[in-house]
Image (cartoon, helix red, strand yellow):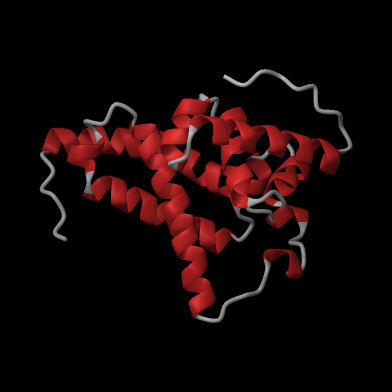
Length: 178
């Protein structure tokens, strides 16, 4: 499929969109995956897709929802490509880098313990709880992104919170989901 021709004013609009959302896409992917190379591939492919389809994306009512949906798809694609090529080393199997050489994504994350706990969740729960709490999206918006019923999203968030509470040694207070 050929890339759409993008007018100059749309190019400037995309540049601003890119600068605003590319770091957030990376941060979202960081919550779901620990392998930096997979995060890099998925984030890059997400933004390439956004640029390739910019004339349509910029007209969407919820371009952020489209972006997170595509990011999740590209994360899955990058992971599957690595498996097809026989690359199966889990990031946890690699030695820790010295503190002075930590990557910028880890340095920006307030709580690596929480990130690691979210990564231990089933993928659907990890996506739902990340979008709900860390991107402040409503369950209906998450349902659009994940292509699930709103009730299913609420269930994923609820179960994720219970699991995180167990993993982190905290009690779930059962807040009402929006």
